[in-house]
Image (spheres, rainbow, N blue to C red):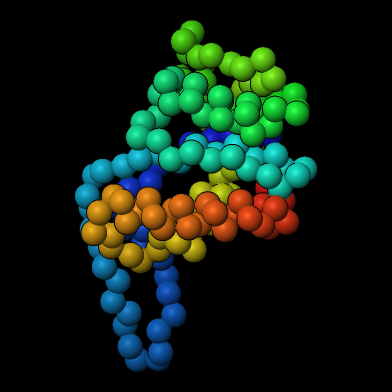
Length: 159
């Protein structure tokens, strides 16, 4: 499996978009510095994923996430690729019996297939939108994560 955290919030992600010739599209822009984190782990062979939306990126949240992955994949022994974030190496990290963590090389996010999930979510569910609240962002992300969860073939092809 591969694991990563993505930060999402109310800062508008401006993307190019189509408009009829001679018309300049209007795209809202906002910078509201409120965030949450999506933790995701993907089994590339099965196209199965686990994700949680959590308020912080720290050791306590990683412990919650690892417990969730352990329960979702209890019939497997999971070898999980993680990046070098401090909470992946913390002494307070409680790694379940059926999970082992492997660090990916430093400064190499392109090696982590979960990065493609973040691209998909940002491109399909968040572009050129100004959300009125963090709850609205969360709702859009939940919709996108559910779509990915329900389509293992798409997850396999992306990762």
